[in-house]
Length: 212
Image 1 (cartoon, one colour):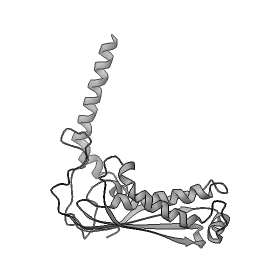
Image 2 (image 1 turned 60 degrees about the vertical axis):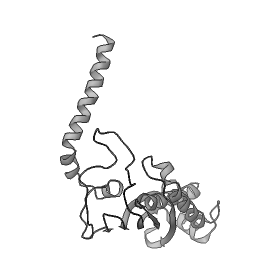
Image 3 (image 1 turned 45 degrees about the vertical axis):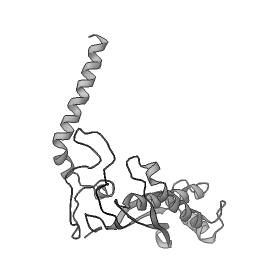
């Protein structure tokens, strides 16, 4: 077969693939049972406080092309999102963090600043996120000695036309990655787990609270 025919067949194959995905996306997403999916997709997972749900992935247009959602027609409202996650480590590593004797200094203090900076840079990291004028970012840590872990909780707020879920989630992950970076010299086996959206408030869709 001529090379040009192969190319045409490959192109046609891609077209068929996208058509199949588009036709079957409702069944595929509805059968997907991953609780964390609602963190990253605007999908109607159960919540007693949600006032509106979407049945499409809003970052794709009618032709299936990725685009930034138009929020120009939305009203500016106060929006809040809270996310959490944890990093697990060896007990000796946690002891270094608590004592402040880690080689690179105040681990949690620097991780807090990193998380705040991460929230501010979210639209640079996630390509279809809108740049947001954040009015508040708070990053808090809780040391769980019995579990040899550190739990991070981040709150992001704005007054605007789109939510701040991604900013809160990014803050958590950057903060936890900073802890890893600062402690990896003594513990490369640390694991980051359970990064999830706890709640969001504001906007047309109302409130979401995980587990409700």
